[in-house]
Image (tube, rainbow, N blue to C red; front, top):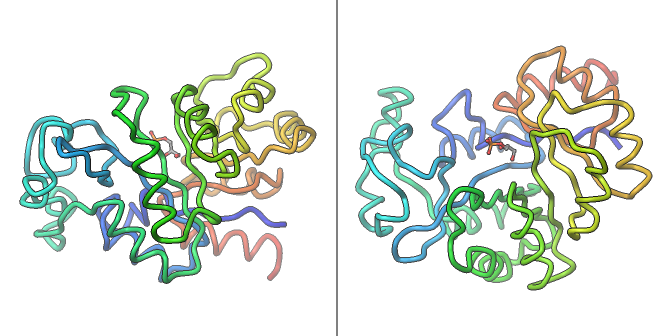
Length: 245
Ligand code: G3P
């Protein structure tokens, strides 16, 4: 099977990350999957934003956890990227799932709980996956190993991935023991040996964040299971040209 292309935070080179225009654009480009990040508001609503603070990607300042969802909706999440996107709002996970439930897309929901370990984030996300009937095509990933274990206690069949940017002896076995089904690695950790080890242990290996042509080529040729990229259109074009589809 060929390497799948996931749009990282949506098509985030083309539109503001983790917003509807970025997801819609990824879908229109033909990305097979979408990766997004979840944090929790003060009133416990899972929302799509990468950072713990809203400073970088909105008109506001401060921690996501200190805002209610209604307060967050008043911020502008588009104009930092381009004036063209002025007025773009934050999305809740629920809105994203309602949209994606009608699309043929794989989903990767990254729980951003390695800095702030939000209370019951796993269960709140899981309940929405069930509500929108997308659990079968979703992978939940986290840099927080305890979170992977918690998900497995909620539903051992839900696909999970341990995220890592650090090389470590016995990494694949470690992820396996946590109950993860996949390893999501930073590009510099990718090697033929690691891919072979993952295959041997029946673990998928997906690579982030792959934006350079040479790096995409390596991922495709080593047959990693997927890449996360800000430029899914370029990745799909390269993959087609390499495999002459
Ligand atoms: O989930 C893949 C990738 O997004 C992980 O790194 O820092 O972009 O969340 P980061």
